[in-house]
Image 1 (cartoon, one colour):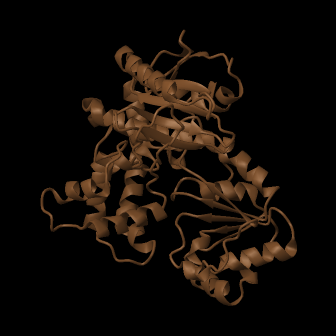
Image 2 (cartoon, rainbow, N blue to C red):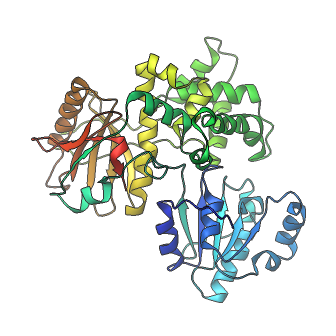
Image 3 (cartoon, helix red, strand yellow):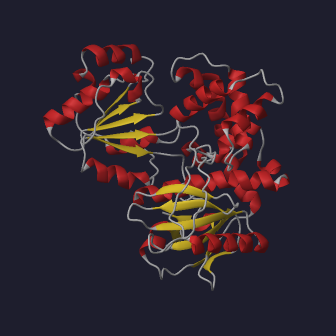
Length: 426
């Protein structure tokens, strides 16, 4: 076990689910902290990717799975997807031991060979998604404004100072939420994001399912995807951007295959469209919004740094949305919430809708800051809120403008919240 452990928001969820289900599947991108988190909760562990023992472990998984599964519980099986046949063995063991909290399976990719899995595991497994650190987890947000309390208490008092400027936010975007960066001096803190990107395009995208994909095509795709962060760009548009006017470079089918590989590794996490009940019939755009799981992947793919973002505020704003999407997903997960976007045929949009299982939801516009941007965001939020059919849905729990900068987090006289991202937390 590591001597230094940084508590994560998902820890509470792991502890709770170990009390209610036989096995937990903790999945997410490489380097986001799954193994360290799981080690904190387990009493024994086996690491299938250990190069000295990997071949032996994979043989055990097929011939003698009990050698992998036996150990004090909760037992961690790290990178379980390397031996997908263990899934059925874990399910069988959970059924026959009839104990909760037996296993934690961590995985940085979906299993390549799913034919070795014969049962869904319903009732035996709980799936938890882990992402790179939010700003609150990395110590870059005060967390003074609690997302949970915004849903719990309509009279929740908000009023605190913020502590970031655009230069700081640009750095946090390019640094990303990788746990290793919290211990690095600022002059080298941007390196891990570039290392992660290089590993994805040079190694991981081929190892994930054994398909020998082109490094150059992977780089070109991720660069194009980064340019379209925060938009509802179609695959066809991405292909056209990658080809640069030459229709013979890559086909839609090939790009979809590469995108599937990136999704399997949890590198990209697009945001689905929200479909509310409205007073009048309105055509809602259903295309997902394009996002990497962490904003630093986008800046690494584009080969840009904080200074480049400051010189291109349009790109800055789109990639800032990726940071906010990451943090909203982290903060809403303990609430069982999902994060969506909204856009209709008339161009009315909402960057993020946090929707809870009990029907509560909050509408959020994301802006860098400044009075003009905030006022435009407020008008958009009010316009969407006015269209919702309150006989068929609840009224929104809150309307929020989530900003990069600002001196304070506060509630306006019209009730709309203006919240700098460095004050938001779970």
